[in-house]
Image 1 (tube, rainbow, N blue to C red):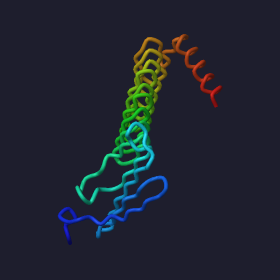
Image 2: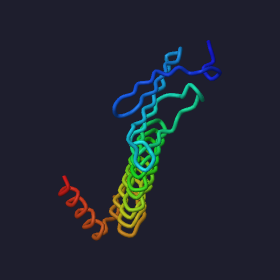
Image 3: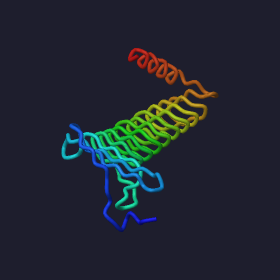
Image 4: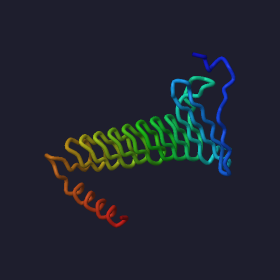
Length: 175
C-alpha cells in the first residue's frame, strides 16, 4: 500500500457559494473531510468542520472557527469530543460561559462532572448553585453535599428549600 504521507495528496475539492470542502478517501476506506466557510469573523471562519485524519500529516486537524465542529474543536461555539470556547459541547469541554459535556468546566456547567463557577449540575457538581449526586457550593441540592445552604437526604435548610423552589419557578417561567 502506498504511503500517502510521501506523495502529493489529491483531494476532492468542492467550492460552494458558502465555503470550500476538502475530501479524501483512503484506500482502507477511512474518510477525511474539512469544510471552511468563506465568511469570517475576526479572522476566523464562521464555520470550520473537520472529520478524520489529514492525509498530509496523519493527524487530526483542530476545528477552529466561530462555530467549530470536529473531534477537537476551539471556537466561540465549539462542538467536539474535546472542545473549548465561550460555549462548549462535547465529551470533555471547557466553556468560558457555558459548558455541556461529560466532563466540563465553565461559568455554567452541566455534565456528569460539572465544575461550574456560578452554576453546576451533574453527578458531581460545583458552583455557587450546585445540583448533583455529590455537590459542593453555596446553595446545594444533592444526595451528599457540602455548602452553606444544604438540601440533602439528611438535611433541609429552609433557605435552601426556598432558593431551589424559586429557582424552579424561574426556570418554569422561561419555558
